[in-house]
Length: 545
Image (tube, rainbow, N blue to C red; front, side, top):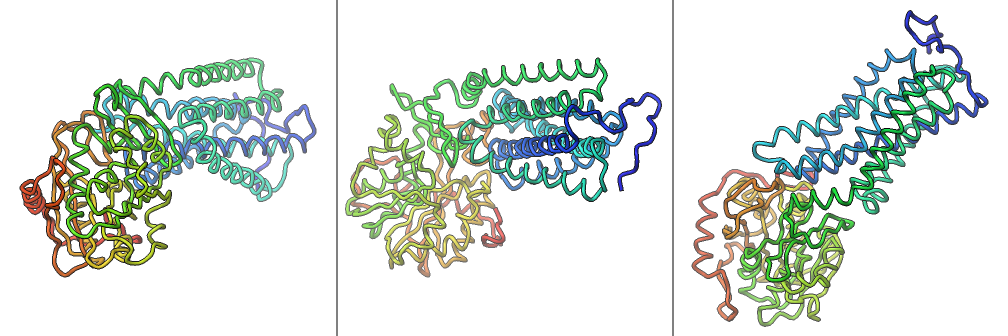
């Protein structure tokens, strides 16, 4: 049971008894529960925004979500305990907490992006600072969210005393329903229509308005004259800061994007799946394609990468080709260069990327207008889901041009189950080629992919190709300037046969190439020198990347 109100301690607020409301108690109680609902929705948006930013900027979404959420839940417990000291000043305490929470939560995304953009990212000498900032925001927001519940409970009890179980049930029902609304609003409304920066800022605006309206409107008689004016001025200042940030968000984002990607940003698009950024591609400047901040197509290395991915797999029968991923159309371009290709099926999750590959002048020039070729057919689907319904023995070549296996979201696309499905759609004598990430920086990941392919019944021929350009690492831990060494890519040519497929080039292909047979032989030797033995296969229920 909630203990009855004791006489105020020395220095405590005189308003510790029943609240003097401007409305009936039932209406006042309803308004408090509405505020609980709104604050819970805002709190969950802050949590999801930190998780999304951490996953995007750092990579490995499972790890980042675990760190952010565990720190926040721990901080909520501490905040709830600390709020016991504010019970005698519940109204003014709640108003102050909501004002600070709106400022901290609303500006957190902008602050994190600023640190990421202007300190060189999350790698190198700056690695500790930004990660500590992420933990600090998680801790601060968790403390403030945790402090809300005891104070709201106190305010409800001041309106109308009731048994503790009933009060807790009402409070947490409103809290959990609000969390549901906030959790659904973030991915389906805020993120696609407003973006992370503006979405967080507007959430902070809603937060401070809801908290201020409750305290200054419903409980203003519990406040001293000084407290009322202090909360009002503080709330207006926070609203002014958030409104100014919203007005400047587009300019800020453009400046931050230039700091991250350079001044030649031509297209920046948030699709339903990822952020797509194109730089260059006009007036003779090389085109770079970034997906969620990771370089996927870069300068003069683009052709070398796609030749290394496609050409070795096309040395046998190749009338029917399946490309998993590759929505930029560059893999399809390489496939179409080979004679005897009758059909190319591209299965790409991101329809927005395919739209750019069809219509952007720089990208269409680079992919040779591959999507205008009647032999190319595009399906928007998840590769794993699509393979489950694909016909058996339908393709001579399967090309897996997918995000690196070190990225949590793509782990399922490098699993034993995935390769088992890919094997099922291969015709007799068919071949599968897999891009398995950089070898130099993540050899265990590369050789885990090889072990997984073997577990799925494939024989493999590994090879490692070096790029020419330096700059952004190819994997999930991208940061500007983190590496000045040339990139490398690891590939695995696989076939469902007892012996490894032959690693060579089609002698009938007369097109000039940056990759020769001698290069492939050297690439095979380079991969062999990095071999890591004794690794186990990765599965859907036990991912090992």
